[in-house]
Length: 191
Image (cartoon, rainbow, N blue to C red; front, side, top):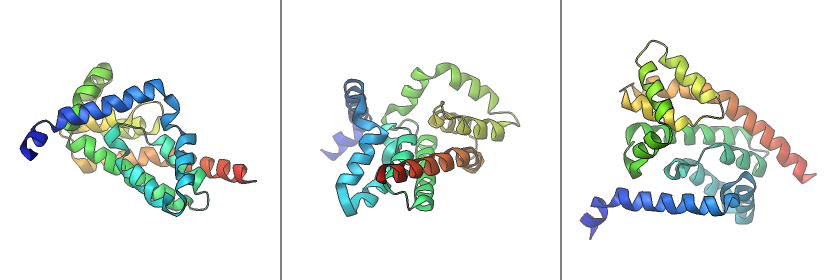
């Protein structure tokens, strides 16, 4: 039984992700900033623990971190530094998973299918001396998926350290903005 499960794990995982994506297609409000805030507020004292777990595991479901950062800042406006730290840890964990295990849940095939031109361009440029700036710039720009740059860095065998440092540097302004903007919105809602 366990051997069968392990052998078909990628298929099971891909099916679960496909079902989740179909749910998002039919119910787009399922994973929004407001729905995450509503879930966290409904949990009461356990909300912080659930929030941390959601931030650490969100990359397994291929969900961007932005709604989680905003939801955390809105729900916990007095814990800005903690939300930033948890967000950075979630980004590092997600980057590690995509970088180290790209075939987990057929994530590599999904990225190759969804972003073939971006991956080809990045693969070519990541071998050059500007890989640091490419990663930092890519992760700074909010409209492109950070997972793609982590995947390509793993493909071209860039060391994890050379990938994660510029990734975090690029994410610092975004996460900081999201946290402080979210906490201001959270305070405004409580007035």
